Length: 503
Length: 88
Image (cartoon, rainbow over all chains, first blue to last red; front, side, top):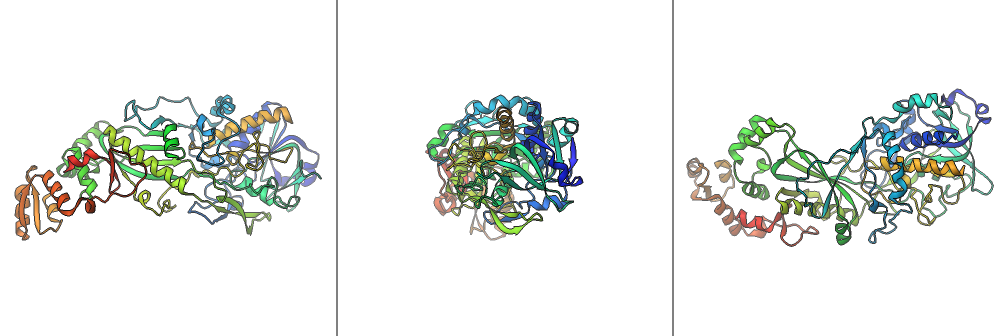
């Protein structure tokens, strides 16, 4: 059933109690609520926005970037039904087993759970995200010998917008009551400050607050809003709920996305190929993990290629000499022969680019904190202080160099490393020229068995709280290199099973 | 590569290739512009430039981690060392 929260007064909610109150309707909240309902639990599913993008809801996401150049905070997520699945690119990949393991040169790394804990939820995650079976990977340009790398694949959601797909199910559900325009503003704790008695909400339409009673509460607000809410919830605990060790909002982690170079190809290539490092490369070079996107680019034109043919009809090594010297960059690509190849097979491309999505090191000072400005509900807005460091930069530079060596060694082509990556200032290109980040907001309420190293335990329960849980990428212990949505859903489904036996 | 591009280098001595049929127009244009013209193979031109200008000044390798033995980074390009021999 679906309700607009503003249509009812506080007394209407007073008589209602649920097994679980799920706050947020993105990939985590929706998948969690559906599985809880299948377990027979009653669910209050709370969404701050409506069914469509609106200014009054979206502006609540406004905040300030005070660290590295980053996307406006209200632009990188969506605050209405479906959450940030409404701006999701559809990339899916489960974390590798190694992504959960500690890495000796990466302090605090390592998850308290492993891949085997999430694998049982792969089939349902596929269904939630509408991602089909893995297709055969394209043949590697390097043949079977990919050196320090391993070829990987991504899968893609066929229908990225989750809310429209599940709307009929939500309307018909006897277990899930979805409340729209229900904005979480506080949690009421018991005298011990360990149990949430009820959650307090406000709609856009009414000034009075209303309460939702449940046995358990799950914050699925996103990697920025989860810590924001916990820090704002300081009425009964001055430091904020779950923040007894000053960890809420810290370790903000992204996947730096950057172009790291372009490739002079010896032969045309057909498909985009993805590569990740072999474990030995990570350990020997003491770097983090990453995904490299080796992509063909550029369509050729007859006129240009005719001209280029006259100028560039030379052996590969001579073209290479010209471009290395920088005297003639026209011969990166093309020529009439190549145009005819592409004309016969439009899918092939004659030049390539290399870009990266990299894991980021955990850094306490990379964080979400509260600024002085408040939103319409009096909640302090975010200041995001995103930071990256030497290990992040070295990871990307080493990745590019090692892949360039593979290209040269195999004679597939030669890589020109992007100038910014050779610059000793070690600054990532900003949002004016680069994608910068996923945007993927991770690790801000990270998972750890120790309350001194994480905000939630292995069951996603907030340390020190009996019935408060967190869903979403804020609980990632480390970010890995894979796009987070798939793992977000796996974790949410696992949390549903935990709640089904513990509530 | 077109003949004009060799001339564009503004060297007092113009080196033109003999191996791609562009020798005569290049010589004529260079001569008209007052250059002393030597006709050499393209490989020798590049090798000669490298020698005369100094390898380090033309190909100034930038410091990059993990460039292993057998590879060199030249003006941002990750090359096999043997590439350099072939380019000369």
